[in-house]
Image (cartoon, rainbow, N blue to C red; front, side, top):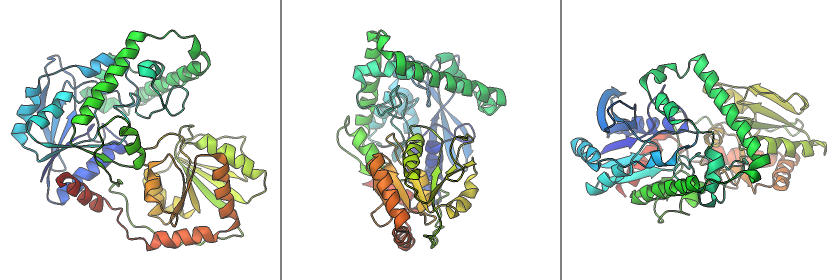
Length: 452
């Protein structure tokens, strides 16, 4: 089978979960004797016409670059919506597709992609598949969080998007970040400082919005543009033949807007290995809880801390180990909290040997949550919020799902502190599970999905 993937690009210029998953899938599909190609949104040139050029291959994957794509906002928001909907000639894509003749096109993001690309696939009767890695398309800032840091349930016909995207990058900055020189400078210390400064400005603006948003006059014209932008992407998604939902969380969100279609298939990556071991849970020692990730509100970190502080007052025996962030909260008692800092992926085996129970308390609608899968592949039970996509992988025998409330979270932690046999049985069931989490297994599932 000849498979064309559309993704954001390749390491080291691009990183993150979307890039890793798409590249791991491409490499594995190629190992399974498929012909794999990649198209990615590339640089902007003085000549404004769109064209597609061939680059040098990557691990034998044929690579093509779309010159002058639509803007790539990444996680920074969309400041000028109309620039993200510019029309182009469908012939550019028809000619390209006729040249390479793929059997299927797998789209991993709508960023930088013209609607005309999907129209060209339709015209040539080439099957298209889209994976819901994030919420870009229905949310310009990707994560479905509003300017108050809460889950966006109503974008107010575009009005809600104005404050969320107000601090997005200017178009010259967007163009710069797609340029060839930036690819080599992105990890420069000065460039990192500038990005961090921009991130801090965005946080400050969000705080200002929380306190002063009622006094702002709404730009009705701009709100209308955000409304048009969402409709533009929904039209694109409805043109796509099949949707691969990486969780029922994303399926429920996308199907609010799309013609029902597609299938839920949990995802994986190439570093997932069967490291499951039988663990012992000593009831005479404090329960070793684990939190892995940034210490941010949307990830539920502060919610977890506030909950555990109440549990502390009840004289329960527990300890929280915090990994993945360099920050430390000095006011928290060292008897109950240990800040372990950032870590390398190679240290996960050691980390999971130190944890009895991993907690994923995300407040946002997390599309999957690889850290939960990694915990299970090391034999560690998981307690997860019902807004995390990874919950689909769990059963009552292998983990716990709490309803998002503090009461339910604390009740489940207390039950485990009292009875460690709960964890022992979960660990036993995890170890006895058929291991079908590998990237090879997932790649085969996706090929079957293409053919269905």
